[in-house]
Amino acid sequence: MQHHPDRNPGDAAAEERFKEASEAYAVLADGDKRAAYDRFGHAGVSSNGGGGFDETVFHDFHDILGDFFGFDIFGGRGGAGGQRRTRVQRGADLREDLKLEFEEAVFGADKTVTVRRHETCEACRGAGTAPGKSPVTCRTCNGHGQVRHQQGFFSIARTCSTCQGLGQVITDPCLQCRGQGRLLRQRSVEAKVPAGVEDGTRIRFTGLGEAGPYGGQPGDLYVVLHVKEHAFFEREGNDLRCVVPISLVQATLGAEITVPTLRGDQTLKVPEGTQSGSTIRVRNQGVPVLNGRGTGDLFVEVRVQTPTKLTKRQKELLHELGTTLKVENSPQKSALFGKVKEIFS
Image (tube, rainbow, N blue to C red; front, side):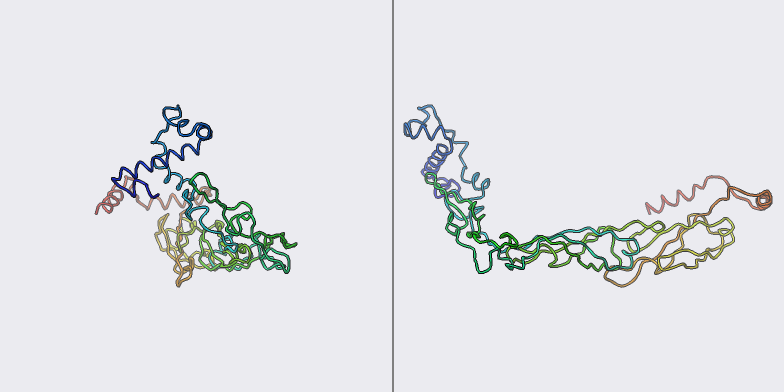
């Protein structure tokens, strides 16, 4: 690091020393070159001795190793070997999926969610040790959580494999949790689903996730809602839509019909001369606003059903009616032209 070219711009001497360090590393990293150096010295790995050194390969070896291995090859504290891990950690978050009926999503519901999670061991209170015992200092790393390996003038620090970087080991584990500090349990969690939720809504329950290792803070529980489709209604935001068939006579003369809503049947007035495909708005019969005020509306699309099976008398009456009605059967270009005009206006 002292002689790195980036730290010594224009310094030829520093650049030469850095190349020497790079060459030394190239020899140490190659078993054949290191063996030749041990037998014949520098002559065994020099270009005259047949070994050769490609300085372009290791020109920036410090940066390459630092990024790849995550530690400081010069013995500094960084990356994987930088600091001793703490035994107490926050628990993991959990996810559970919950299916809801359409009405439950609209009006809200109290549901029960079954969760399998690690909970703090009651016997050792998360310590992982037997009663009256405590973790002892790891002999491999002497409590540092990392082990240093010296290779030439390089000092490489790695996480201790004995204690996994904790610096301590449990020699007298708790018999109930076997030194883990946690036990896997199945619990029933009461989940209050608010009115107005949609498919895919995620509800967070703070502190109901995995217990943290060795008494650490618990994670959170996320419940993802999956709403079933309704047989009659379709949802668009806070509004509902449905299709209701009406007869030719009802559409022509107007009528009062009974339509279902999520809050019970309601009388709907069909105006005289209603065309098939027309939409009638019913206010405040939609979905409540989630965590807010107000309710969406219900939009009822009426579709005129053309009768297919008529009696002789019914046909006679229709023929008689047909002679009194005049309908222009030419294409209606004005409607299409009006839509195009609206787009570009």
